[in-house]
Amino acid sequence: MEREGTLFLKDLLALTGFEVSLNALPPEKEAPFIHKHRENEELYIVIKGHGQFQVDGQTFDIGEGSVIRVSPDGERAWRNNGTEPLCFIVIQSKANSMIKHLTDDGIRVKSEMVWPTSNEQALNK
Amino acid sequence: MEREGTLFLKDLLALTGFEVSLNALPPEKEAPFIHKHRENEELYIVIKGHGQFQVDGQTFDIGEGSVIRVSPDGERAWRNNGTEPLCFIVIQSKANSMIKHLTDDGIRVKSEMVWPTSNEQALNK
Image (tube, rainbow over the protein chains, first blue to last red):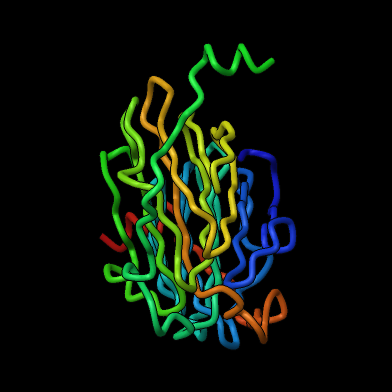
């Protein structure tokens, strides 16, 4: 996940409920501009590196494990002030779109898991 | 992000458009059961480790950088068959909920970014 730049997944994976991007920002680089959103909520998850994030002019440090939710109208930007790539994931989806089901959306299936062992995989070749 | 177990972010961060969990599964462990969903699409993003994933009985290897989208009715499970924790992020949101705005949801803001330098941070203390 360290290829420089941004990879959007929605079209690649035919996502229908949200957009996700994988990002690797080189040292000393920052977001191209401050932005906000019309309808979409965003979540930033930092995977590695060190940086700073700002929302509505308030700045704070971010690093591995940081998770930042931003409401649509939050004015946001970020920069890498570390020495390695700042790797982070951004998820966006329409705010208040998740109305009906949450953790109770999952349904347990009765089937048993069957995993191929190394031997079985070798036999299949 | 290597604390063993699953950390759900929706309630912690007051997310309104999707649920996200951070997961660290120890070696030789697997999902507690196969599950599917009523309405929600899921995306799995593998951060580190090695494992296997199965959907509707079809199994494939996963590792750092794997991204797996599963439709609501896909019967899914996973296991860690490596020697380190299998760390992955799961995003779920209502399928087909993202109708109106996608990348054009973002709005550029005219403000300029102002970042505190190390000196300024020291002066503020």
